[in-house]
Image (cartoon, rainbow, N blue to C red; front, side, top):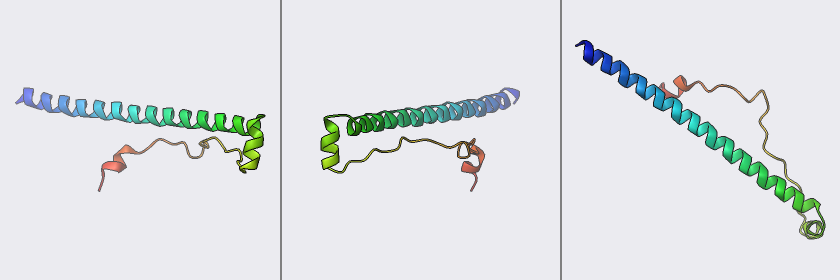
Length: 86
């Protein structure tokens, strides 16, 4: 009986560790996507502002775009427990 109880705790612990790994992976993927987007916007903005592409950009009415930023007020820790409550 003790061995089964220990196994259940171990299993629950493994599930929690998997959840942590998954959350970390999602955060890394979001960060990578943000970096890729910002790099693309920076390349686009450079093209819009530099000669000779600036001439074509003006003719086509292309404007510079803003890079993605997250304000400090929007950065917060997600309450994971609330995601699993119904």
